[in-house]
Length: 94
Image (tube, rainbow, N blue to C red):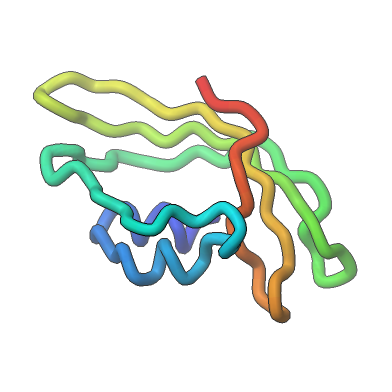
């Protein structure tokens, strides 16, 4: 989760797509050049250890866009795919 947040900060689209499950990954990812990520808070995690094949991360990511402050609150589901943890989908997002 933290590495994907960092990839959003530096706009590393290749990394984001590579760490997205292929069944859910978009064909193209266009990031808003005016959006600036300001911080990440991990609120809760479930499973996700070396002994698990799935896990969730609930987080709040703060950003500015168009001069306005906002945040994304999401519970993300991650799965092991070909031995690596990848983002599968949002369980919920506010």
